[in-house]
Length: 203
Image: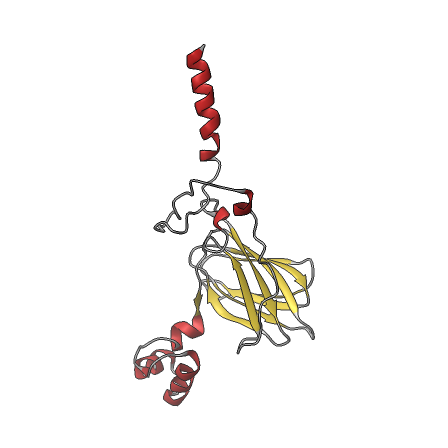
C-alpha cells in the first residue's frame, strides 16, 4: 500500500513535465528549442504585448512578434504568432521564412498579399477583414496595404521561431562587392550602390 501511495505521489508531482516545456531563456538554445524552466506560472502562457507597433519607418510597417524569445510558453509546441500593422502605403517587402509556414488572419483594412512558388507561379489576392491566407514555408512573399486606412493582421506560424530573410536586405545589406551584386542582379552599378546605402550594406 505504501509503495502504491509513493508511486502515485511521484506521478502527480511530475505529471506536467511532459505536458509542456516553458523556455528557460537563460539556457542555451538548440535546434529543438530552449531547455525547460523549473518553475512555471500561468504568466508563462499569456502574452500581453499584442499592441499596435510603430509604423514610422521606411516601410510604414510594424511587426510585433510572439515567438519563443518573446513568449516562452510556446517553446516546443511548434507554433507562434505575430501582429502586423501597416500604415497607408505600408509594405512588408519580399521575404521568406526558412523554418515555418505562415497563416495570415485579416483583422482590419485591406492588404494585397502574395507569394511566388518554386516554379515562379504567382499567387496574389487582396484581403479584407475575416480573410485568411497561407504562405508556405520557404517561399518568397509580401504584404502591402492597398487600402486608404491603416491595416492590421495577425500571423500564426508552424514554428516557435520561423526565422526570416528579407530579400532586399539579403541583396543590399551585405558586404559583398557591389560589382558582384551588379553582375548577379543585372542592375546598374550606381543603383546597386544607392540601394546598399539605403539598406546598410558596404560597397
